[in-house]
Length: 129
Image (tube, rainbow, N blue to C red; front, side):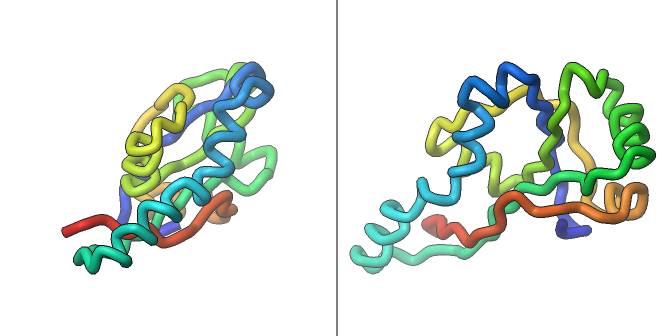
């Protein structure tokens, strides 16, 4: 998790986890590959950005504090991911369905408050200038 970025907390219900939105998010790194190849072949100028999706490392006390901060019930959203702005852009560009957006948080504040985050996805994406 980059301390200098803003992350959007996205909460997934059991139905989201079983019904598809979660799987679409987990496979999002495969979507921009063809677009990036086409840009390179055309000789387009592009900017490299990092797409990152994080989650809180499981620990009972930290999870309890997270759900309190978000103001949601942990039984309703058993899974919460934190997407940076690039991840949100990729999701929008490729119409990846996102679950409920629960709020925006600075990486440094999340790291200071909760410490350890795991990474679901971390990959480069290239956008035209």
